[in-house]
Amino acid sequence: MADEVILLDFWPSMFGMRTKIALAEKGVEYEYKETDPWVKTPLLIEMNPIHKKIPVLIHKGKPICESLIQLEYIDEVWSDAYPILPSDPYQKAQARFWADFIDKKFYDPSWKVWGTKGEAQVAAKKELLEHFKTLETELGDKPYYGGEIFGFVDIALMGFYSWFKTMEKFGEFSIESEFPKLIQWTKRKKFGAE
Amino acid sequence: MGKDNGKVVVLDFWASPYAMRTKIALREKGVEFKVQEEDLWNKSELLLKSNPVYKKVPVLIHDNTPISESLVQVQYIDETWTDASSFLPSDPQARATARFWADFADKTISFEGGKKIWGNKKGEEQEKGKKEFLDSLKVLEVVLGDKSYFGGETFGYVDITLVPFYSWFYALEKCGDFSVETECPKIVAWGKRCIERKSVAASLPESEKVYQQVLKLRQIFGVE
Image (cartoon, rainbow over all chains, first blue to last red; front, side):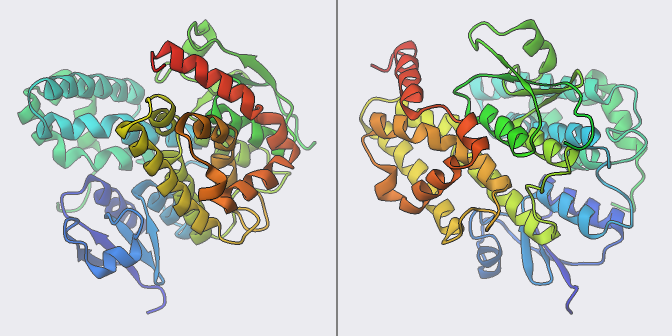
């Protein structure tokens, strides 16, 4: 089918979750192909030769790589439903800045807190808590990062929600105790059955 | 030049390739702006206040409102001053492709990447840095192909992202003892083509000046 949308993804990927959320918000039907990122299938290599990573969004046979780029693409193609990014250039810039912060700063310690030991893990935990604080401060008293709309930054961060328990367990801290506003934010948006 | 610009200030450091992106973008759009040169070892109150998250240059301040991160700034400039032609194509697939290559260039041809070359003495670490740098540049050379610019016939987003590092090539070559022109001739030809644009010529420092700065950095970091 000419309009076919396919998503190559791996079920625990916080990046793939972003793309799934965006497609769901826009009401786009797509074929989901479970793709183990450690098994570089011919399709994965063909569609993402540079990084060989998931998620890969394939639309009309052409690949779009990198989750935040996929969100912008989805927003531009299915532009009549649910705006993911605001239309005002300054608000857009702020949204891009914070999504970029999540990828540049938050991501690394978020896995190092469970994926490393000793000094490296201690440093990761310290950094992670700092970034959680920054993100909670940025949310402030808004319902969502997008204001009234669950938008670009909300989607970018929500992909990590399934990993919160893991971070807490290995980091030995409670996100609810330390960052209650963030936990309230995670509960605010109603999704379908998870 | 279209609508009233409002006051535009760039918190800058002359050798920062990231700040060069923002200045190029503003000049491409014909936007008048003031430059405030920062001493990166003694950052101004304004810089620290305007970019509390990273405390880095460049910061774009438009009508007293700061925006940080160079690629976020370039997109903001593109979307705010719309009289001049856009840095990105209009087709969503082509836009996604441009964003992908700008992201790739940003991650692989970087200050940190360059530091692996100038920040190490001759040896294994430096060789590793050189290989990473050249491997990535070669990928970008294939992407460029025989086009005039990464944007095709139009100078665009990917060109703006990468061209500042052209002013750093000489410094890296001297420190790493290699030639970018030998390894990636099309990239060098592209760089020379970009320098012919007023916006780029006005925003990129002389390569020799960058090299002198890198020698200073080598002293500071105790590389010599």
